Image (cartoon, rainbow, N blue to C red; front, side):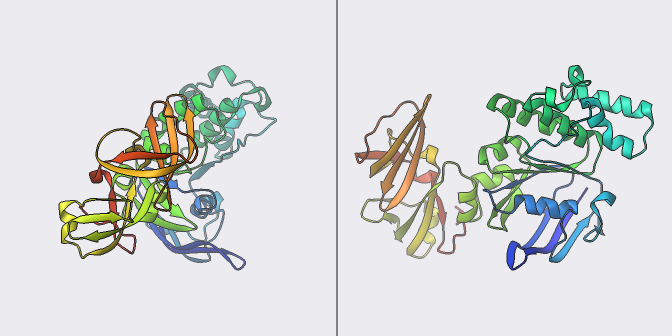
Length: 352
């Protein structure tokens, strides 16, 4: 199903929750809404589902204006972060519930329920009640109910957020495969950049009720069109700073200077913004050396995350291995200038 939002806004009283948004989602694809809490992900989903009506603008589905169409008349299924199952129904009856409402025959219902229960490894649990299930089994039941409905639009609102790490990894890998043959348009909300990368498809980066950018997930990660999009698509936070370009040289305050990429030399001299991902800032190696004051060093397993003050900015180094630092220590870090993203004063990416 092709879903398009045309100049959609949404207010609650005087508070604007969604600013003017035009967005055409890719039919038959995974479409990811990426943004932190209160960025507008859930509100956009509720608008797409018909659970909320836009304050202004229109929502179109397959070329039809469905802005005022009730959710019951739309081919849509939604799975929330918190498990929603009928507590007095068995797993079988929970999965079967939308098919019974649709008036399917008992044989059709049984075939579909067992097919999706098998896909989601729920066959041994079909006669159990939700209170007898683990958290992962409850969420699998909710997913099975969404799948069995055969909806053209499936909305997944952070569906894995409350699951343990192992199960999240497992389901994250399975989800695109589960929907691959359904032809459904899937919209998946997450606050985790890594999750968006792993799911692939297309991503809309959101910030405070605005869609910052929309495109292929990998492309937005590698070459974000704006500095704001780069910030949304990074965890730990991407390292940013203002530099001054003079001829072929970039100057970061009085801290360090380096040769800019060849294409940037043609740009006018003056201030620019740079962004450098944490895994490109290393506590050992070669390249541009920058000294800073260590603020905190976190060591988790085989990874070190070090926060360091550089020219008044807090930068983050994320690297494999154990690297111990003391608070307030002066330390050198290294990066490859070619790994930097360069933005103009308006925060727009300079294509290099």
